[in-house]
Image (cartoon, rainbow, N blue to C red; front, side, top):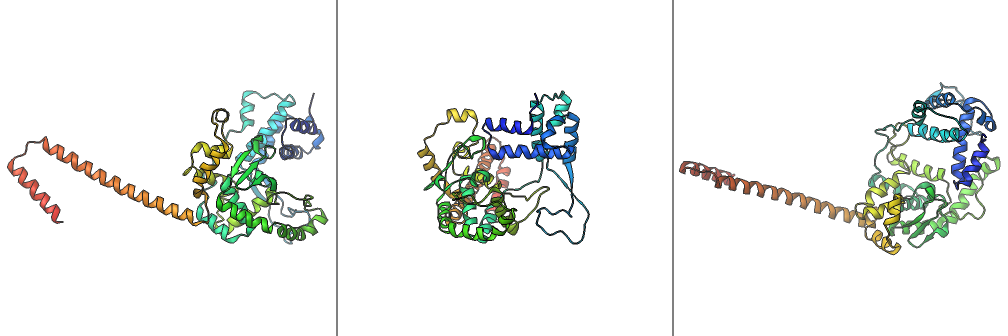
Length: 390
């Protein structure tokens, strides 16, 4: 029995995959059908290892025709230009092939060892594709944005949440400084509780005061596009915390980062919205226990989930004790940073002094074991006297 694309999507839904995941799989299967120039509903009749490998090669470089606008209602360029060749990232190719490989295997396509290794597309080490998100960049971004952007950035830095989760949070998911990540919106259905720093709560409160006005302005701006069908309408009684899709969140971060830095890598900006999650992991671990940090990020392995049992109230207290490491604009962060720098300098000075004393002690011990003549002692005393004068 062969599974059609619709039948495969039904299986994914039965396996409790999110609708966004199902649509993502469908999109990749559609790209394979387009490559073969066959209807999507007939793609299950065109599954072969050779076709899959040809598709993989086609994804390494593809051609964009600039005469065809990205958006249907966009104006065409008045002067034609040469086609642009853009490469897909290795991770993108690997993800596409992995999804297609599962669909092929479900439909009974067999791969020998060599074919499997070719389709598996081993992970390549990509150097220089990103860089750490710096505090100075975050501070500049906060200076340039509105209450909406400030709330989003401080929320991401405070919680370490994925942007795909943040865009699906509801107003009811926030209770004071506690945010509940529901299982149905979490990656791998692995939800949990995260916490807001004092700074993030302040910016979130400011945003919630402007939320209704923001939605009215946004609706007025997008109304013409909604009428034309080029933009989706806002959900009825929109209860989303930030009333923004993942694309909107990504766009907000990207535009701000372009203004303050804008350094580009091979495939994308050197810092993306996911860099906020990496910033959380790096900086929270400086003042919190690593087990707490990984627990808040919900990236613990199955053994951690079984054996690491910490009461929620204890996690909350420990988080707030070390939350200053996640401040972006509050003075507490700068004070803490300056004190830490002073302690590091003092520690370096003490270590240097200790090393000098150890060297002197070793020299004295060495002299004690050596038989010196009166002339040797006079020469040493003379040398010490000269050094003291300098």
